[in-house]
Amino acid sequence: MSPVRHLRFLLHITSSHPILRRYVVVNGFDGALTMLGLLAGFRVAPEVPIKAMITACIGAAVALGVSGVASAFISEAAERRLALKELESAMIHDLEDSAHGRAARLVPYLIAASNGMSPFMISVFILLPLWLGKWGYTLPLAPLDAALVLAFCMIFLLGAYLGRIGQTSWLAGGMKSLLVAIITALAVFLLG
Amino acid sequence: MSAKFERLVLDVLKPHEPNALEFARAIAAHGYRVQLAVEEMDEKTESVVLVVEGSLIDFDLVRATISELGGSLHSIDEVEVRGAEPLAE
Image 1 (cartoon, each protein chain N blue to C red):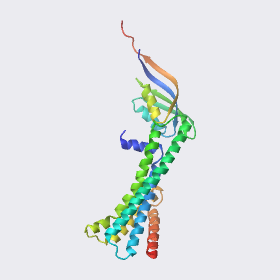
Image 2: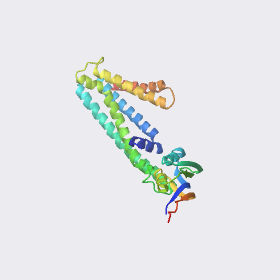
Image 3: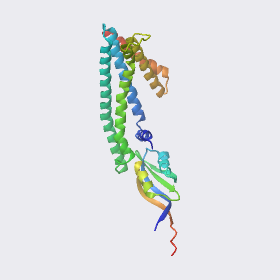
Image 4: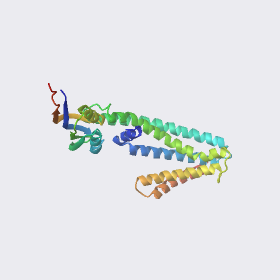
């Protein structure tokens, strides 16, 4: 069995696919909304240099990523250990050397990595226009405005994805997320 | 003297996951014909009767596969063995 298939098998026997998906979407949403908040703040602040925007946003993205890895690993490692102990107790048999034992050891790393990578990657993607602006590329919008549009798009897409998973309307899911993003941006504009 | 196992009926306790289809398929992947019947279902486990048929069954391999999938062999309920031809004097 290839390593990828084996990992998928371990996720399957521990029913971890929905958990992994939930972590990726929820933390990805956190990442996108944090970037939106920061970018909206820079939009109302007077004359913030692009370099300072990028540094501040990357700092937040790294913190979200590290927080995602640490929190998911600690909680998932404990949950998997407990699930394994309960299964061992039902089986009256040690399962450390079985696929279940390996899953209890490996799945927390996989979930933690996904949970950390999701907000980081989404944040980096939203910041692309700022980098392009810094490197001298001409965009149809100002780099900060383009990054804001990208943040709204990402938040809409995450909501649409959740709507699709929940077998409801993807458009309604996307619009709900977009509403949250608009409220956030308005709050920043009003308070800022 | 060697003997060939051609049919084994095993009583196995297994977790719900991998499910009966995946469990049977993993053992059949060694080239055997496998029949699995769920006898009893509990909150986290199920007792199954596993019938393994083949021309030359490697019992240790079957047992290792059961353990790898989190199962536990409770008993060997039936065995069909073919003895090796005696060597000519």
